[in-house]
Image (tube, rainbow, N blue to C red; front, side, top):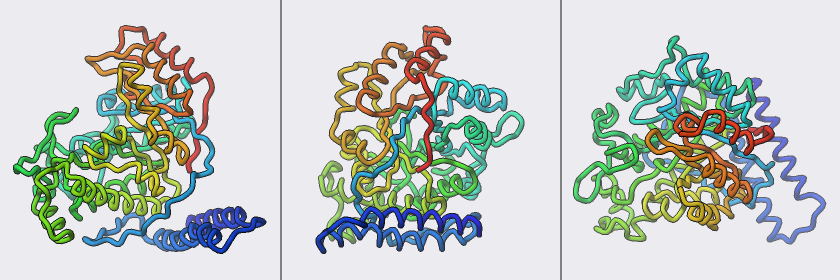
Amino acid sequence: MNQFHNQGLQVRAKLAYLFGKLSGRKFSLKQLLKRSFPIVFAISFSTVLLLDNLQSFAQFPQLPSSATIIQPEILQPRQLPRQKIRGVWVSTNDFNVMKTRSGLKDAVTQLRRLNFNTIYPVVWNSGYTKFPSITAKRAGIPFFFKGTDGQDVLADLISQSHRQGLLVLPWFEFGFMTPETSELALNHPEWLTQKRDGSRTSNSAAGEVAWLNPFHPQVQQFIQNLVLEVVSRYDVDGIQFDDHMSLPRDFGYDKYTVAMYTQETENPPPANSADEAWVKWRADKITAFMTQLNQAVKARKPYTIFSVSPNYYNHAYKLQLQDWLNWVRLSIVDELVMQVYRNDLNSFISKINLPEIIETKRYIPTGIGIMTGLRNRPVSMRQIKSQVRAAQQRGLGVTFFYYESLWNYSQESVELRQAGFKALFPRFARRSRI
């Protein structure tokens, strides 16, 4: 009940702020109605939010096959404190560093010393969770990722990070993507979508993969339950989805989706997967699910940062059906980190100067994903510095892919690399939850 009371105070404070913004100013009737709508929406949604939190956190809400989605109000640019994103993704390649208590503590201490402020640890990759998940277990997915002492690595990382003032946003890296040989795909073949020729896989950076059908209610329920499990069980500051919370445009020709599209449009899906209306229909369905997911997360923990890390918009929308700019405009995204993995500085700058980035940073904290190296492809500190400086000059934060490559996959010394990051971030910039 204390949590219920505290959330009530928070809601009343926010409403008081909104009404205060209206007081003392003259508006026409039309202007007043327009400006009052977000307040009415906030009151309605907050009532639902508070009632929902009376339910047990151990139970996950069921997503009906035809869920009614509350349409979010398109807001004006938010008056939020500027958040300097200085993040790093912790990938599966970093697990050997993080699986011991001492190694994890040293890693977090080093990041804090170099004035990083955000960690994005992977929790969903290759069809497996990196935390002991009840949802995954029910789907027949085994769990292998305990620490060397049997500890929950995610819980340990959150504890160590919070002690040193860093935020932790668990990263659902694979989204709707899963290996075709994973237990999830083998146990639930009806959850997979396919191309027009009947094939069910595509090539990706992770190899040949299958795709869960983002339009199938059971798939949506599975993903939502995974996310709510993390939000409910751990003291996370947020969650993050990347470019795989999407669907390659060649997919969507499975029986379930074809029947849905035919019923709604009275026509079968076009043979051309790039057909404009067919792309929009599928992208809108993913947007509706992301809206539902955002609302479920906010109902569970209102101040959870809902973060996305997509490709640049033209690629994301046309090739991956990921209409993330619309998500920003609908206020279902609290933070955006756009991946820009380029070696050429001019190419890098052209992407961070795109209109969608200029627009997005007016609304929410915005950063750029920068590659710091792979095991077989090192990136020089000179290149990293030039890209970070370019982002900083434009008021953008940065997040690096990935932890070990910060200083371990380079011909440069560890000392030189760490000094380079220290020079980029000379002072600590504390971040706060929204």
